[in-house]
Each structure stands twice: as C-alpha cells, then as structure tokens.
Image (cartoon, rainbow, N blue to C red; front, side, top):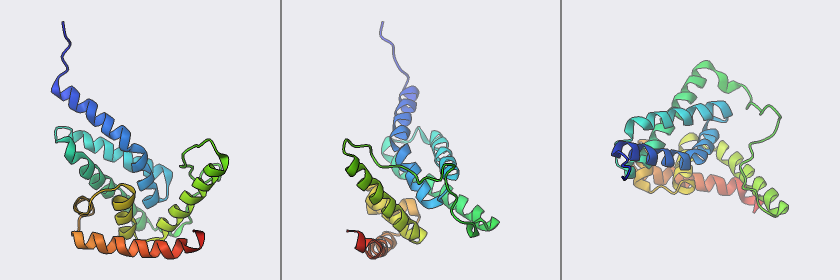
Length: 180
C-alpha cells in the first residue's frame, strides 16, 4: 500500500526547505542592517515563524513575502534601538572579539584569507551606507531580486529602488576604490 502525504504536509515540507535555503543569506542581511548577532538571529527567527502563517500561499510568493517580513522586523528593531538611544553605544564585539566569519572555506588558505578580507571590506562599506541604499543593494545585487520585487519588499516605487541602488553603487565604488 502506498503512503500518501497530505497536501498540507507537502506545503509544510517545501516551506521548511525554502526557509532552510534562505536562512544563511537572511542572517547576513539582518546582521548588516542590525550590526548585532542576537538581534539578527531574533529577526530572522521571527520572520521564519511569521512565514508559517503563509505556507498556503503559492511558493512563487514566498521569496518577496519573506524579505518583506524580514525587512519589517529589522526596521522595527532599529526603531526600538533608536527609541532607547542605544545607537550611541559602539558596535558590540563578539564574545571572543572576532569579526563574523562568513567566507566559504576553500582548499587554498590564501584564497580563504582574501575572501574574508573582501567580505569584511564589503560588509564595512555596506554598513556605512544609509539604510535604504543598503537594502536596495543587498536585495538587488546580493539576493538578485528583480526591481519590481525589491520595490514591493522595500515598500516604495521602482524608480526609488533604482535611485537607491545607483547611489549605493557610487558610494561603494568610492569606498572600495583603493582596495581593487
């Protein structure tokens, strides 16, 4: 006798796969915006839990929906911080004093070091961008979302996305020019 899986269970399984695949990128996006590991983990977890309410939606809608939810969680956290005046405090360091290590491990230590240095420089440069420019760059370039989807996620028009992205690219070019 064949075991049949209910459509609800299939939706849940595919949503779990979607969330597992997007999790690491979502964490990096949140950490760039929040600059705090625990707040970033909380924001991603909240967004993933909220996605469970939308598992009945078509899978094609999950990507823009997830990024919209995560972006809202990040903005909410930033607003709470501003309200508490925590933005005056310096960026908290990790317990061991190290920087986040997101570079892929490769067989060549030199290449690994170069990758870490490149990501660190990019992360620092992105961190200096205004929030909307950082969001536009991260969603369009790093996440490869199209302009319309990015506009939906950011809650603005497509022209605004293009403007923010153009300004972000110019600022990043200036900041990273000496590193090439």
